[in-house]
Amino acid sequence: MPELPEVETTLRGIAPWVCGQRITSIVVRQRQLRYPVPRTLAATLDGTRIESVTRRAKYLLLHTQRGTLILHLGMSGSLRVLDAEVPVQKHDHIDIVLDNGKCLRLRDPRRFGALLWTSADPARHRLLRDLGPEPLSAAFSGEYLCEHARGRRVAVKTYIMDSRIVVGIGNIYANEALFLAGIRPQRAAGRVSLQRYQQLASAIKAVLNQAIAEGGTTLRDFTASDGRPGYFRIRLNVYDRAGEPCPNCGEPISQMRLGQRSTFYCKRCQR
Image 1: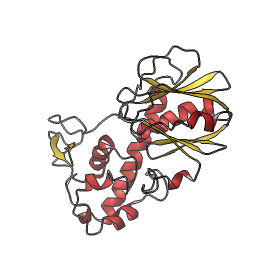
Image 2: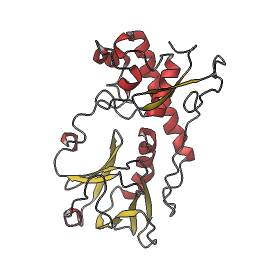
Image 3: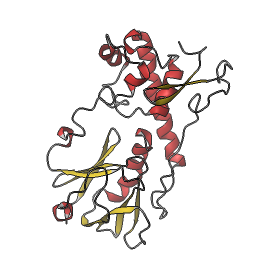
């Protein structure tokens, strides 16, 4: 599933091709995604210019003169910038055709993605308004995590994966950040000290920045016609390495289920 670093890399890949371009048409081949694609979208956006592309959590926001397209890649979606006449393949559900002869093509085999529209402030949209801070922003810190964790019995791994607390920390990155910070995933969020939350916030930023940097060199070309997601994986210390030696101490990596997610950690290094 595309996570925050993959979505950020997608943003950086498509932005040079679409910013400043006018939309000449929108071709919707499959309207039933996670949410139905608005039927008035093509008429609303005909002739408008894409002014910028930003990201909020795992959502891509295409800002136009008339409002904002809100796009989510779901479980298996991908975006490619192609010549508009490139033949359509299976699961190519939407084309946003531009006046430079290119199109932004959404492929989504499992149809869990979304393309929505708002003419209002996108920060107030129902999908975005209750989200926590961006993990790479100044608003996110150990102090912030500690303050919001007071009295909470939920496991710290579940806590940092809650998008109302902080956005974009998926299962892989939660496992890896907790390992770097030396914190057991099942420890109650309210029983983690400020100092350790400071270490955790730094670890989260480091893991995400590493993944974004890795994505800049390993993600497939955004103009490739096959449209495969090509999402990368960072060098992993614990995730999906149950039974293998910890890179720090050699102790076999342990695995458990936590919040319906596979969780990996080192019993010796994390406490």
